[in-house]
Length: 248
Image (tube, rainbow, N blue to C red; front, side, top):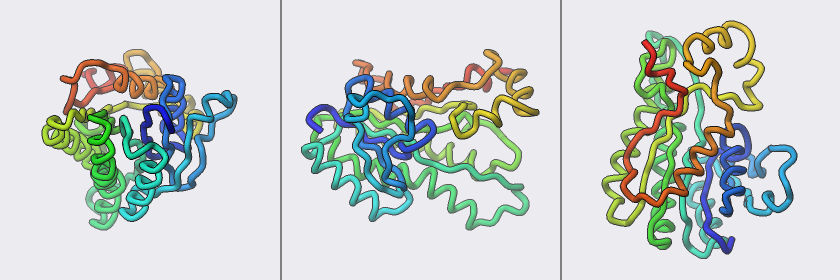
C-alpha cells in the first residue's frame, strides 16, 4: 500500500462496501476489515479500483483480532495510516421492560466498545503518519427516544461521546475525530423493505426529501471528511438524515 491508507471496518457489505468504493475512487488505498475477510461485495467495479482494496479478516468485537488485523495493515502500509472509519456495528430491538442486561451489554460492546478498541489500535499508526482522521459511524437515533431501541440508541449516543473525548485527547497529535450520524439509508440488503409497505409510507412523510439516503451518499460524505483541509472540524456529530430529525 504505497499511497495513503484508510482502514474501514465492516467493509464487505452495505454502507461499508460503498465507503470502500468511494475512498478508492478518491485515490486512497483501503484496508477492508470484515468478519468474512472478503473484499467488498459490489458488482461492476473496475479492476483498477479493486486493486486499491486489501481485505483483512477481523471481528472488531474481539480485541485480539483487532490487534492482529492492525498489525497486518501496519506491515502492508509501512507502519502508518491516514485514517480509520469505524463502520462495523449491529442493530437489535426489544421492549425496555424485558431487555436483558446481557443483551444491552452485547450491543454496547458491538457498537461502542469496538469503536474505542479499533481507534486505540489505529492511534500509533496515525501518530506515525503525522496525524489523520477517524470517522465514526453513528446514527441520528443518538438524540431520539425510539420505542424498542433502547440499546441501539444508547450505543450510538456512546459513539458520540467517544468521538468528543478522543477528539480532545488526540488533537495534539493532529488527529481529527468526527461522528457521522446518518438517518435511514438504503442498501442492497434492505432496499425492498425500505421502498415498500408501511415503512416507505412513514419515511415519505417524515423525511423532507421524501426518501431515505442511498448508501453511496453516505459514503461520499465520509470521503469528503478525508479531503477537508481544515483541522478545526473535530469532535462534532454531523447528522446526515435529510432533515428528518429536525421536523416536528
